[in-house]
Image 1 (spheres, one colour):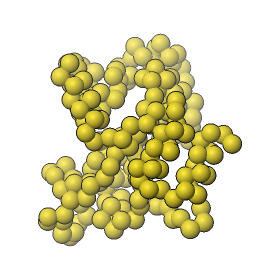
Image 2 (cartoon, one colour):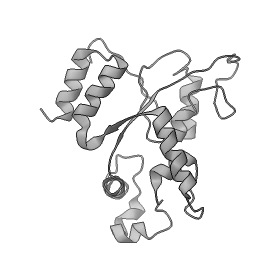
Image 3 (spheres, helix red, strand yellow):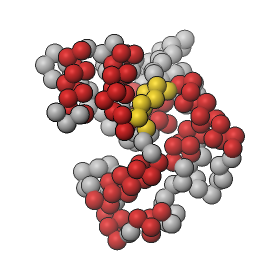
Length: 185
């Protein structure tokens, strides 16, 4: 877009995040907004904790990079359906898996590769279905969202984008263009 620059990085893998850190994505303030599908990978870009990845020879002592998480949420069943069809049919997707072509939705949901309660498991770091989730896990996940995430709803994406634009002070022209695209205008 005229007057705006973009950085193309792969944030769907640990290796991609490592390359983004090595290239100074956050430390050199190369982007105002970073889009990630996996909050665990995105969190590796920020902070100075033991899980933070940093560039070789980069002095990060006393440096803490903070991000603000914002997300569009949708009903878990809608998310599951979309993810299934992405894995099964979208060969441009990083999630595409040709072996999924033989599965029905029911087959997949009953297979070991399906992750139950995906968002809760992601937030509390229990991605293995063999590890049962507890009421405490649900409370922790809700608290993480309450404290650390600006929440929008995919079913109300235009209103959610307006909310994000107000909160982050995004340019009105970009906001209008983005809203027009989201509303299908």
